[in-house]
Length: 238
Image 1 (cartoon, one colour):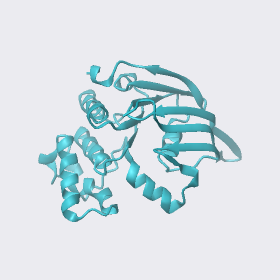
Image 2 (image 1 turned 120 degrees about the vertical axis):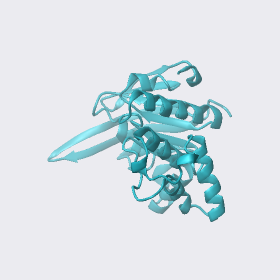
Image 3 (image 1 turned 60 degrees about the vertical axis):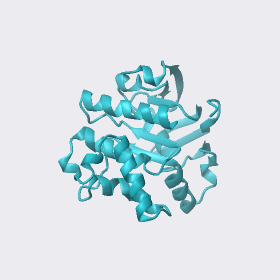
């Protein structure tokens, strides 16, 4: 796999929101390119546009102007249904609040996105069990979220994100609600997904310790690209 191939290309992207009678420009003619197969951390002060950019890249929101090419698609050219299909096939999401369904078991939570695919029940089970084994929780597959620790819940959320074998994992403050030990386990897991399974990962974080697990750190400032730092390879971070 060539490291020079762009997974994400952001070209002159602007995003504004109306708040009261005021127009807020959250992203201002942003240009950014991120390579396939790398682990990126996205940092910046509050209000710099980090989560907005993540939502645009994941097809959860639309830019006011500019172009977003992600995983080989110009997102502006996709219809609503086409965008939903593209997301299901290409993107796995991990959120700070886990977003697990409380009445479902770990297995059922991981299986949920697979129900949107043409896979048979037996194939769904194989994918879900493999994803739970990957995050070290196959023995907890029948537990509901309230029976798991916060770190375990986030690992289930990561299993759900990777069960469909997406090209891109988007993580919004995935360690924000975790203690340091659980956070380190999640960061090691994300690093492993990048190293062994060649997943492209973009992680929003405010925590320099978490950002150190990434290969590159992209800094946003007032909706524009500040600077990009390159770390040692992710496997060197422990």
